[in-house]
Amino acid sequence: MLRNRFAWHLFVTATVAVVTLMVGCYWLASLGLARLADEAAFQEMTALATGLADVLPDLDDAAQRQRFEKVARGLTRPSQLVFEVLDRQGQRLAGSLSTATAEADSSDRWPEQEWLVAEAIAGRPARSSRYDVTSGNRIFAVAVVLSESLRRLLLGSLAAGALALVVAWVVAQRLARPLGDLAVGVTQVAAGEAAPLVGSDIAELAAIVEAVTRLRNQLVERGLTIDRRDTEQEAVLDSMIEGVLAVDVRQRIVGINQAAAGLLQVDIDAVLRRPIQEVIRNPEIRRFVLQAIDCREPVEDDFVLSDPVSRIFHGRGTALRDPSGEGGAVIVFNDVTELERLESIRRDFVANVSHELKTPVATIKGFVETLLDGAIDEPADNRRFLEIVGRQSDRLAAIIEDLLALSRIEQSEGAGSLPREPVAVASLLAAARSSCLPRATERGMAIELDCPDELVAEVNAALLEQAVLNLIDN
Image 1 (cartoon, rainbow, N blue to C red):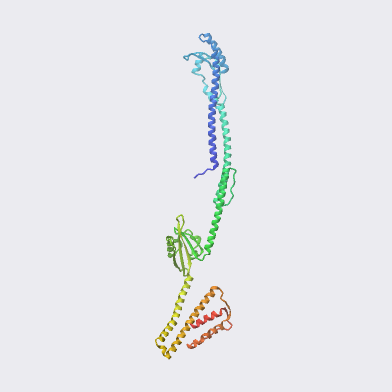
Image 2 (image 1 turned 90 degrees about the vertical axis):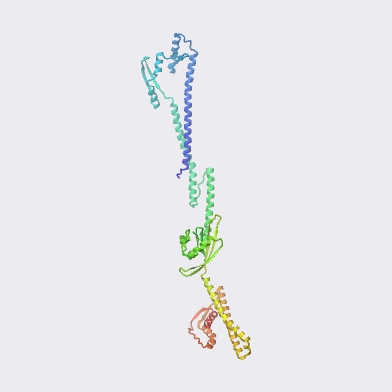
């Protein structure tokens, strides 16, 4: 849309007002001057006619008519008026002109009359002389434009109008300049620049400048607050080890942190405002995101990603609902690969320990039941049975001791206070060999030690010896 400057609006309005005023004043002045000229002529003619009528004698006889015509001619010369006396029927009785001249004048007054008028209107001298054949006299004619005063009035009106237009233009520029400065300042505010606005000595414009300044300050403060919150939010999200993914109801990504970007192997700036179908290649994750958007309750599921290495992630999705009716979902991904590995180790450990405990317990229970069934009365068998029960009890004690040692190791590692010291590895291995040598001899096994004496390691001697004992015993 074509837009005009405010100064032009003011100038056009002032121009229309000035032109309308000029035309109106000129028209009224023209009417006034015309009436004034007509009135002056009428008054002059009325005064002369009235004065002449007061002294007019009875014109019944020819002598009185001749004397009136003589007086009328004397008045005609200075006043250039033609006096005639008419009867009630409109017939000419007498006049300042002769009868023949009056009749000729009434039929063809001035042949050059049109030329005189044209010359006078053109502003050139309008003079004419001719010989009147009827009267035998040379007649001089001079035409003067009656509207000379009107022309001067028109020129004066045009000059006054031009001056008024110049003044109107100056005033319009003065009024429009603060608005232009205000428009520039508001444009800078809209562009995010904190440039100060130019004040004005006009009360209304000054109020607008103050209001826009307050609005700008509020916008700047609000923008700083939003930037600070965004920075804090980004810092929190980037510091999280969990992956966070936010999508809107149209399944477009509106937020993602570094952990989620690494999980999905995407670039943050490249995936924002893009549909998940273009970004997420895993169909299970896409299905989970759609489920999180549609469900009112939180949803959870596990995913296995094999690129580049196999990892297990636990996802938790929550639907978003805002007052405007727009929705979406926030999905949090946790890398549970290590937890799953530890859980697998725990399950295997429990299964192994259960198996290790079940064997001696079953053995002890079997021999105890055998003794209770009557074998206790046979001295040769009951001693052998009791020795077996004793060995299985020792095995149970060893398993329990191993569990306690493992618990102590985990507690020490968790507390971060595992003591270490330089130890000769050969002496530590020799001590473990000595502890296991009797049982190895019973089973016909030999334990050989091959370790240089100068080998030294900074370890926890007790825990390392226990580990070697467990290895040899196994």
